[in-house]
Image 1 (cartoon, rainbow, N blue to C red):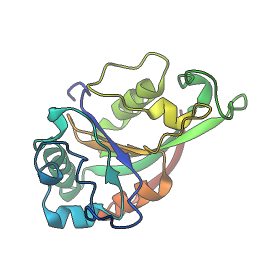
Image 2 (tube, rainbow, N blue to C red):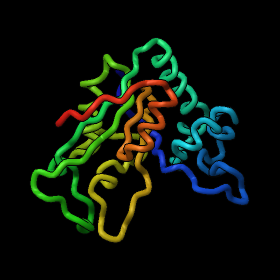
Image 3 (tube, one colour):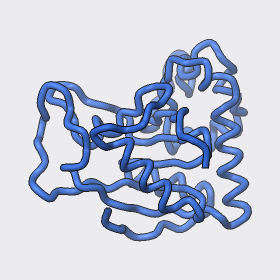
Length: 194
């Protein structure tokens, strides 16, 4: 696996069509329309998640469809799994300025993953590091720790991520994960504790 540097944040699906259309026209900045995804691909993804604006050209000129293509190829080869693992909240970086609801001792959060089977352990390690107190450097903020341990007065809408450099998903929202797994025709695996 290559280093994980580009990670696209994913928000819940948009509830209703706006005056600007079904998709957020600003999600990919000044890059390709829909980041290079076809209208048909957007129709498949729209009920699952929406793309957050990342603020960097690296996300805007075809990187997202390339990553999704790698994931689809792994699914076609039967080399993709959907699994859940938990992370202790005490291992998740604390938010700035205090928490809305500090976690109870030994409490855990679920992370839902779609990744190639051979990468299972490495993907779990990387996601745990992204949430941790000193995560690896990425091009733009991931906001995983903020999603798991929200700050008081600041809510994060992000609850899914597409790792672009290698091609895998992770979510904090079970419904988004289940719908994404169904799109790639893979069955979810029960929880493992981390």
